[in-house]
Image 1: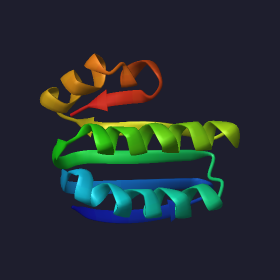
Image 2: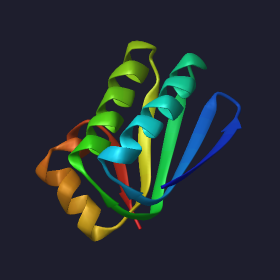
Image 3: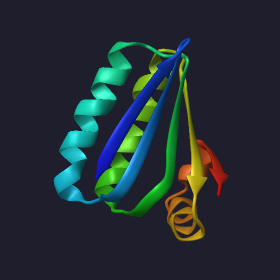
Image 4: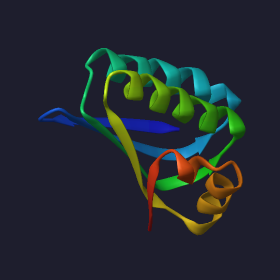
Length: 102
C-alpha cells in the first residue's frame, strides 16, 4: 500500500494505492491519527488506485470517521470502483460517509 497526503486550507486529501490488508492497517492508523491531530474540516480519501480492502481497512476508515465527527469534521471518499462500492454498501459505509464512484 502506498499513501500520499496533500494538505490545503483545512482539508486533507489522502490517496491510497495498492491493497489494504491487516498488515497495512497499522500504517493506516498512524496516518489517520496524524490527520486527526490537525483537526481538518474535511478529509477526502481517494481510492481510485486501490485494488482491494479488507474489513480491517474499513474499520480504520470508520475510526477516522468517528474521530473527525467528534471534532465537527467530515470525510468523503472518491474514486470508488464498483467492486469496492459493493463492499461498502454491504457494510453500510455509504450510510455514514459520502462516497463517489469512479
